[in-house]
Length: 250
Image (cartoon, rainbow, N blue to C red; front, side, top):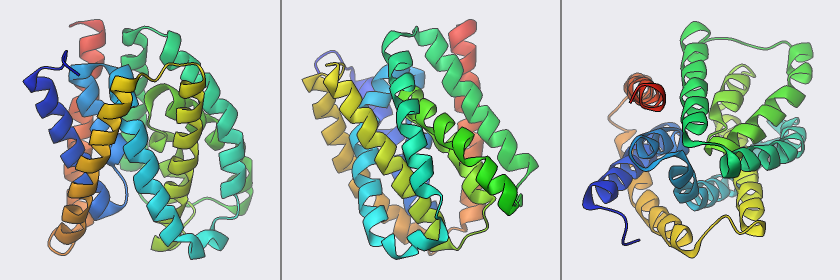
């Protein structure tokens, strides 16, 4: 705790505020926004550790409150089961890989996600493609969750293309994020890669996230999610570009 400067605390607070407000408005964005912003100043590993508990707790609440929508996404159980070994692989990468590799992986996946959203905003999957993509999407989601704390670049384009209703849309994200975060936390705890200091930081992050998520819910009445999404994707692009530049040229 003592090693964190005031600038680091400001980055953590701003990242959590931006991510939590985004989640309140759109149902997405807490780790996807907060981790790249934190990582640009604190490093990928520290950012991922801080966001584990906020991701787990906020999504557990959403998953429980929207559980009646589970029938619309029958493949969700398979995605989670296939994602678990992916989390183990990703956790090993997080624990063993260099900061340059982690920053590159995170920035590239964020950019891939943004490109898919830009090029295929209305993409819909056939029933055959929906079944065929369960395994690669589940495994890739797990690997990304374990190594970068963000599985959205693999999961979001798939769920977007299912054409399900809004409640099932948010339920699918929340349930996968919750399940993979719990697996990630369990694996890191079992290999003692999660220190008491990081646990305390993560608990503080939960408090901040729960303050700002209701603000996002309130702002939803005044800000169109599409417009806010454009702003957030712009921030993500700049942050990912900064991470990549810092890893290789900084």
